[in-house]
Length: 185
Image (cartoon, one colour):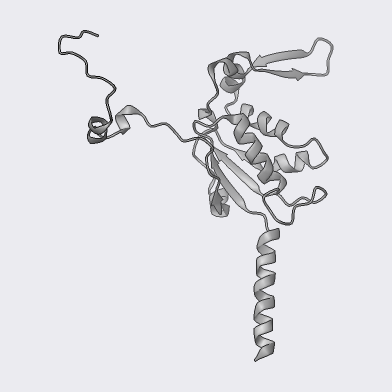
């Protein structure tokens, strides 16, 4: 009797250990999220910092699938003044691209560059970036959908549109002041 109980505890402990070392697939919705704040969180998951077995010399990170990259949100001045550098390795091959131009060309590139710069610049960086899967909209391939286990919490609340708020809730919303009847807009 004691042997089977001990064996059961051992089997349960090894299954927990396998779950700790196994790679998970996590989903993150980037709609209305700041790409630089999101990149810090995604980088920690790619490194495996959220796991109790993390060590800087081991590769224990998880896969992260990011959807709705085309709907990221930055302040207006970030879109205009944040510049991305690229060089072709030829003489005179340096080019600077603003964030909104880069986002128009490839909606996933701004978030990809943010995550790349948020991950430490060691030998593991390219392997970690290979586990990052970015999609401009919410369509994910079926083979990736089968692997998804968890969803990462969004850092900022997604704002609601006025037409999405029911009329009852709009009427009950506290008013700051009442306009007079003869008021013209």
